[in-house]
Length: 135
Image 1 (spheres, rainbow, N blue to C red):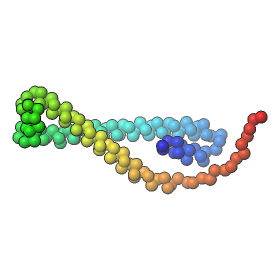
Image 2: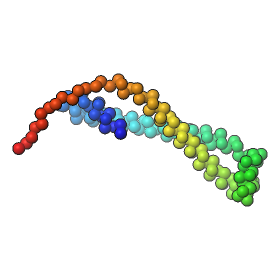
Image 3: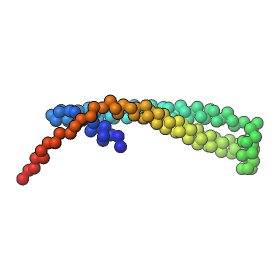
């Protein structure tokens, strides 16, 4: 939804004899920007997942009554190796979910911050050019 209108706005002011070079440069910048953005988001996701893992993992201890009740419903006790596997998997799922939520929040925040930049684009009027037909 954004690449076509953005490329149209960027390339509309370029003279026709330079459009190929401008299009190539625009594509290069778009690919480099996308790669950098993906790298930033993946790094942020990984860090937030690790932070959530550490935060949520602090609640896993034998003195947590909710944990004991959860494991009793599964007929397990906190010292059982199977209980640790189940808790590790649940912890992984919830920490990755929290990392994903935080990453989408960052993407949304960046989008909202950049939204006013639309008003900096110059509005150009499209000139009516005659259509050349080959008969």
